[in-house]
Amino acid sequence: MSKLTIALPKGRLFTPVVNILQQAGIVSRDFSDDSRKLVLTDEENQIDIILSKAVDVQTYVENGVADIGVAGKDILLEAEANICEMLDLGIGGCRLVVALPEDRGITDLSQLPPTGRVATKYINVAQKYFDQQGIQIEVVKLNGSIELAPIIGLSDMIVDITSTGTTLRENNLIEIAEIAKSSARVIVNQVSYKAEYSRIKEIVEGIKRVISEKSSKK
Ligand SMILES: Nc1ncnc2c1ncn2[C@@H]1O[C@H](COP(=O)(O)OP(=O)(O)OP(=O)(O)O)[C@@H](O)[C@H]1O
Ligand SMILES: O=P(O)(O)OC[C@H]1O[C@H](OP(=O)(O)OP(=O)(O)O)[C@H](O)[C@@H]1O
Image 1 (cartoon, rainbow, N blue to C red):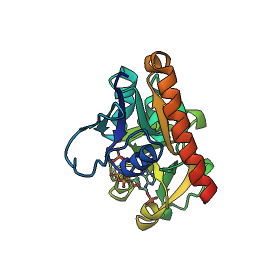
Image 2 (cartoon, rainbow, N blue to C red; image 1 turned 180 degrees about the horizontal axis):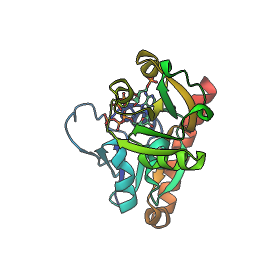
Image 3 (cartoon, rainbow, N blue to C red; image 1 turned 60 degrees about the vertical axis):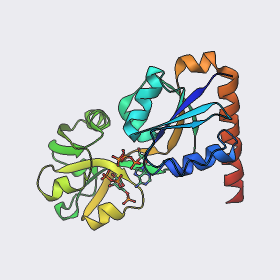
Image 4 (cartoon, protein in one colour; image 1 turned 180 degrees about the vertical axis):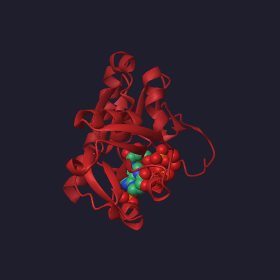
């Protein structure tokens, strides 16, 4: 059996995804001692797990250095990588939204002026969305703390993900439009999908089983 490589994001999705992989019997090792390692090896199951920034997972998978990966739909929409999207894991749920300061008194996209400045990590998603709405925007690319931008006058609006809504609320921002819903997806390299079809299918089916068991327990 040849080794398969799975790229996982290091952040908030790592632990829940590893739990799913363990429950599905895809990996059987405890990785908790490997706190700074970036390649985690499970010899018994012939799996290497590589740990990456969430935005980079699809790059590894698209380039074939990872056969399988897990990435948020938000990131997949932004990158439009050539990969096979196989499965919705039903975790990491959030929404990509347009938000602006509450005190502007705008509650709907139709009330926006025809031009504006938008701060975001999701520059392609934002540009495409506002083009479709016929609103001319200038995009300011940031890599985090997006909600800060309208507070300090760097932008009029933001495009960012929201989950509980706490970050928007605590920064006096309100959502005026939803662009897309997001959750974590299993993605597969297009060549691996064909070359390793039966093994990848087995892995995907194993994950599906765990997810459906979890959802039936809810
Ligand atoms: N607050 C949130 N609630 C639920 N899901 C979220 C939330 N923030 C992000 N996500 C989802 O989890 C994925 C990974 O987010 P995470 O914060 O781990 O990485 P990141 O945003 O790249 O952070 P960092 O720059 O610290 O690595 C996102 O692409 C998104 O799909
Ligand atoms: O609606 P909430 O539950 O408050 O979650 C939304 C926040 O979570 C993410 O930030 P993250 O914690 O990844 O930090 P970041 O600003 O560095 O991206 C996102 O960018 C929002 O700021």
